[in-house]
Picture (cartoon, rainbow, N blue to C red):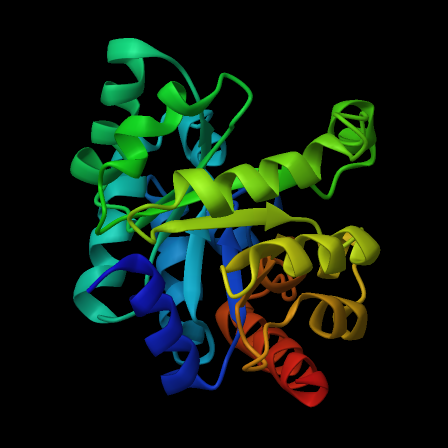
Length: 270
């Protein structure tokens, strides 16, 4: 099953457009976990097991693992999701983008080493920098378009032939790069007007929308501006607000409650 089909199937099966970002920060872990040698894996595994019934995807953030020399934990976590929660896609948030053989290696890293179902990529170097990802028709390629950070406007809003650069990226991906039907776009929840503009350009293409929760994106605005004609087409990601909802030994239960609350709020506006 392709990534896009898998996301759609999971969203229907779970009645959920929620994606949980797995961004481990050991300093924020519950006290009973911090000294454990495999704390990063155990923390993320427990969050996954508590919330898998509520999500359409999980999104581990590569740098949060690599900075802690926890690449092995990342690989085991993705394998655990696939084994214990089949049908829940894994998006590796790595924002890759390079040329030549390096791009080939980045694609192999994401899909073959780590077993991710999709990966985020940066389009700034042009099509050849993402072609090795695009060629993997069974895998998802999620292209940065209009990101959620305040500095996004520095480049993404620049005028390119009478329209902002992010709209040019959206059209380019939708019309020219999506030959295998495996593309999606990243559009931040903190920019609902831009989200609407991208939806109008790309039709039913999936949109990964970070920025709800700790970053302050408004759920109603995201759903109203970003859903497709079927009331879906969104992968709405929240990380810190769910991961660190609790600080005691019941942290996974607290995460589940927060995830359920957010999933229900998303569905309220669908």
